[in-house]
Amino acid sequence: MRCLPEDSLRKAGRGAANLERKISEMKTTDAAKLQNEYSKLVQGLRDADEANDEGAFMRNPALPDDLLKEAVPGNIRRAEHFVAFLKRFVEYLKTRMKVLHVISETPPSFLQHLKELTFIERKPLRFCAERLTSLVRTLELTNIEDYQPLQEVASFATLVATYDTGFLLILEPYESETATVPNPILHLTCLDAAIAIKPVFDRFSSVVITSGTISPLEIYPKMLGFNTVVQESYSMTLARRSFLPMIVTRGSDQGAISSSFTIRNDPGVVRNYGNLLIEFSKITPDGVVVFFPSYLYMESIISMWQGMGILDQVWKHKLILVETPDSQETSLALETYRTACSNGRGAILLCVARGKVSEGIDFDHHYGRTVLCIGVPFQYTESRILKARLEFLRETYRIRENDFLSFDAMRHAAQCLGRVLRGKDDYGIMVLADRRFGKKRVQLPKWINAALLEGDSNLSVDQAVATAKRFLKQMSKPFPARMQEGVKS
Image (cartoon, rainbow, N blue to C red):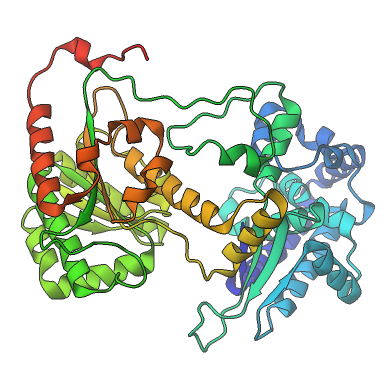
């Protein structure tokens, strides 16, 4: 998905102005280099950028092959003409931002409006991303980050001009439903995941898709538009039970716990979640990772925990760190978390199931001995982007809304759980804390579901803590090296 806030467009405008100055400087010092680039662009992007090598293909797999064979349109071949073209496009996008109501339109509708107002044709837009990459390389620019907003605009132009279907443009003038000050953002959202993987299937005769968290398998061929030759799900091949999955459905007071909208802010539910955190902070050595469904819910729970004195009790046992939408702040929190786990202080990292931490960060060994999933990580169902995608999946692939929402939530839950087990010599505890997980356990990957005992699928906080203590005691005992090896399945 491409998101263009108003601030990014202002930065893109400044980036285009800087490019103009750089081009003028190069004309006086090395005009031959610009002329050489122009000559190559006449032959086509493939010859200019060697885009047919494996690295370039994997970097930009969604770029159609016919685009790479064509000559770049004459009106954007010369560097100064291309920058002027980009500036016109940026100014058009700025004018589109000056609305106070939501706009939703298809790429053809957007391009028609663009042509009527600016006379910009579709064809040169398709080449914007690669043309800008070629220009940056020719100018030998070092401060690439200064031109990132302009690159985003160029990528936006290429995508919107390349695909008639599978994409949707949504212009939202306000950040939220309750906001009164306009802060417009233009979304170009991909509704069809098959677009990204289709060039891979076209290029290779055999494709293997494998992961520990793709489950249930049946929905992937539907969504990605392919037929499977072999489709298998395997259980874990460890000789010892090195991870303990549990479903906690109620607190110590036997009150149900859930992040469902009707009871998520109930003080009793919030207190039970807090007690779960306190107890696991006491018994877990080193690191604990806690995942919430959203930043908004996490902030709400943390605020209520603070008022209840729960965080003060957790603080006695471990350091508390929080993931934020800011990547630099999150990187600093992760660094502090790892330091606390390594020096014996221990730490708890509070994060979000769809954030940076859940996708690409490993918590191997002492960095993650317990992972807690607070609630089922459903997407925000009032999101216009999600509604558009659900409608597309229903009409195109006959995938029902509830089926996709449940699949997506459990996929993210499995990704969160997988953070804690990163090798044969690793061990950890996986806690799914929501009564709804009991009915959705069949959607978990086979290796997790097979290890989830029937007696551990409907626990109270006290029962879960007792079970975890027994598991950790077992893990603390010496074991022969052969128990660390895999077994035949």
